[in-house]
Length: 73
Picture 1 (tube, one colour):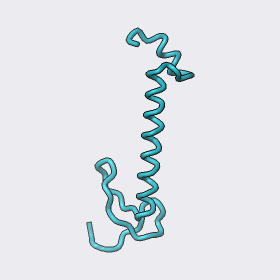
Picture 2 (cartoon, rainbow, N blue to C red):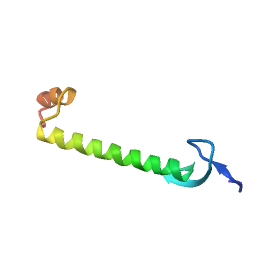
Picture 3 (tube, rainbow, N blue to C red):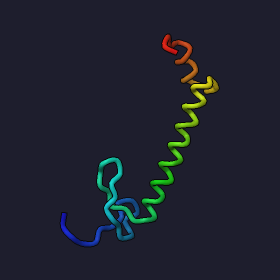
């Protein structure tokens, strides 16, 4: 890659630095990178809550129907 000033991939308005996200290099400014990290944390919390409610049997909807039909549960 050439040298120079790169702009943020997300907002396209601020200077950015190279960030490795999932093994891919993205040029993000500090603010957009912090937003990405916060969104990722929130998604992990949501998935962990769903997983724990699924294990307790308190989930609703498709998962509950699938669980009743699945012989491995």
